Length: 116
Image (cartoon, rainbow, N blue to C red):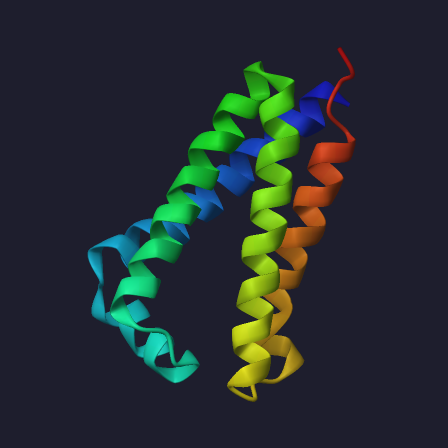
């Protein structure tokens, strides 16, 4: 299980960093989505900070297992917020699916970590 934990941690860290950095930089590609969801520039940047912090936490969680639990909770809350904004915007389930799958992957990752 340790190998699966590490692989999923790395993949989720890449996903979180890949989603967070464009929000921090306010790239036009992600700004349109934020406007669709009704998210302000300040909140959009804060979400980017949270996603980059999650990527760092995922990496640290590989070496320091208690961090894996904290990061799992944070990512799940972040994804719940994403789903909430998509519901508010009237998006279809297919648009929300990445956030739902990310939360499920995070729950699975946290549950497969080695017990110390």
